[in-house]
Amino acid sequence: MRAALLIRHGAVVGDADRRFIGATDCPMSDEGEAQIRDLAQRLSARFPITAIYCSDLERSHRTAELLAAGQKTPIHVRPALREIDLGEWDGALRSAIAQFQPQEYERRGGDIAGYRPPGGESFSDLAARVLPCWRALNANGEDGVVAVAGHCGVNRVILCDVLGMPLANLFRIGQRPGSLNVIEGRPDAQTVRLLDAVAL
Image (tube, rainbow, N blue to C red; front, side):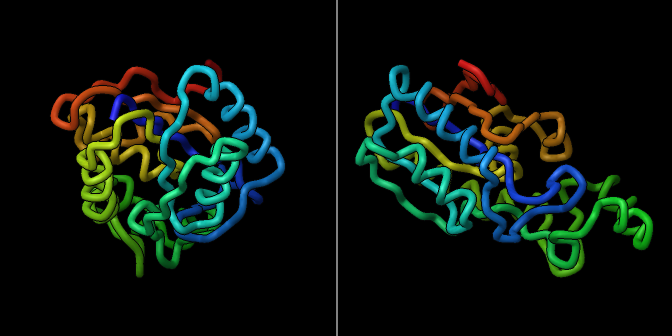
């Protein structure tokens, strides 16, 4: 492929800044859909998308639909691209976890890559699920611009892999709702050309 557009879905319904939102299937808000419509319009002239990949979560699939609107671009659903499963923490207020499970909250902060919330995944687990899918997508010989309607955690583990960064540093990579990352190059020699962009 000539380039990969790694896109985070738009803002979701509810206060995602205060809650842990992982595999919970929450939809995008009106604001979030507007963010993706605006991005799709700006992308159409500069990056004609030939295929779109998304997870089976509503906010990712809807992002793919909005990117494809009026373009007849094929959408491929890959459950392996769904957001990290935060188990019992999914949907909980961050402040509540910090208050009622302080030791677990501190353990997570000390081991971002390896810590699993009760019943959930670690970011290492997420990477083990996402990266084979990402590499297969890169290796399929598709010529053109491929878009991934991704999630915050999913995008970060892909970007860590491309940049050669340890997963322990993944929160150093910003991924705002509706943001765009551009990755170019061969599968074994990729370059991040744009990171966490919300305007072109």
